[in-house]
Amino acid sequence: MTDYKHVLLAVDFSEHGADVAEKARTLANTYQAQLSIVHVLDNIPMPDTAYGTVISLTEETEDALLEAEKAKLMQLGDQYNVELANRWLMWGIPKQEIIHIAEQEQVDLIVVGSHGRHGLALLLGSTANSVLHYAKCDVLAVRLRD
Ligand code: AMP
Image (cartoon, rainbow, N blue to C red; front, side, top):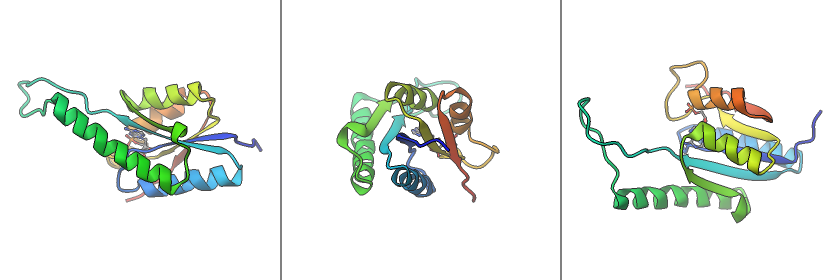
């Protein structure tokens, strides 16, 4: 079996996120691997449209969002003893940024939840599905149930 050296945990701070985080930590400990965490801010500012109320992010709300998400990431990082340099917070499209960081940091195992904030409607959430398809390393999708 492969000895993993660098595990990347992708967190969306959804309800079941702790189960995914625990699994990543257990795997990192088992393989004595480095553990990194990534959270992607995907609230893209949108102008008013004909589809109803759409919240447009101003610079202030964007900053507030960034600070709030950063605090959550820092708390999780402290809880799991993740080095500061291995805590990643970025704006973008989650699937793309997760894969980007994984390649940049030579991660050999990405851990995601089977579902996130977007619910259990699909067998596999869209972020999890894309990461599974496009990552060049192993991916563990932790099965989350209702
Ligand atoms: P989804 O496919 O969006 O239902 O989410 C499945 C899993 O992908 C989540 O349990 C997380 O592990 C990961 N994920 C989703 N969104 C993000 C995000 N914005 N940042 C980091 N990881 C995410």
